[in-house]
Image 1 (tube, rainbow, N blue to C red):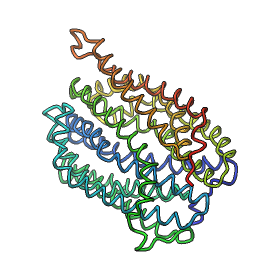
Image 2: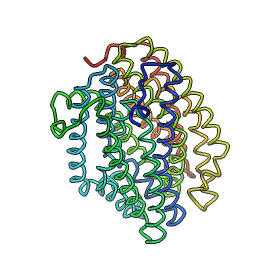
Image 3: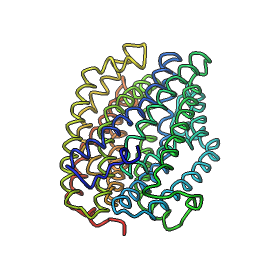
Image 4: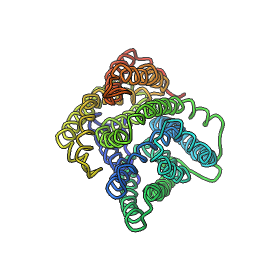
Length: 455
């Protein structure tokens, strides 16, 4: 099954290769989204709206703490795809072994510091007192089991670089089913509340990581992974970090912005926090085509850059972006049409569902713009230019989104809304996505990314 699973994206019609590679990613991302969605549904239905708000308040901190793994995953994906495209067997094995070691060291560090940072961070972002203990319990268990989450993301990035987007899908489906079963058992049967859903997630992600590692060890036809391969080689680690840290920093900046916006959101009360979480869960579904095509374009570009096929990269970018736009438009329309039914999956309160849907309508057009940002950003990252997307993200999140959210909130204060209109948070997000698409297209057209291939 090894040769069937892998795809050499340097051959064949670009849009067909991109689409066939993207579909498993799309389904896999859907399964990944189900982790958080099912957690929220179980908590909201069987524990209550405050517990749902606790899970929502935990999200930004968790994302902030795992940002380093996003960087490693991106860096190793770029290296593996370019080495695979260039048929460089020795470099492949060394880069993979280094990634595994780097992930292990970072996981241990985060597990060690997590007991000391969770409570202060939750207080820092103004988490309401009535949900503070639940949020802390949820986060602690997730952080103690972060190695499974980290390794699955890293190993999936390696498999994607090899052109294998099917294996990650298989393992995500297995772990998602396991996660759903454990959610129901821990919450309904054992009455463990939010701690139950976090424990279910940790176990399921650990299983998926083991399955991904077992799959990777079978690819002996293109590289050999021995005991000696598992060492922290300085030159490979530095290359990986040079490529990956800008993406990790991008995620970190985004998470920092989320923390700052979450601090503002928490001041609007637990009802808005719960509605915001419901929107973000559905938002995760709307983003699936965008992230899937972004990942696909990174691997597609990396393999073709490694094979010195820049002409094929240009052609594939046009076709891949068109696919991303079409998919995003269709999925966004479906979500808006069935929005109320989707929101009711998370709560038994119809008023809360209607409130969340009104917020969803504000940001809906932004998904189409974001598809452009992800596709063209994926091309730049695949070519080895991870700095440009990072600086775009820095400007958008810290220079526009956060100031705009607080500024609009301040300008809309009134006796009825002493802190401001809660919609300010979503208006700022929409504006950020629209402007982000414009900036990304501009820098893609400038073409500086074309000279960033690994030597």
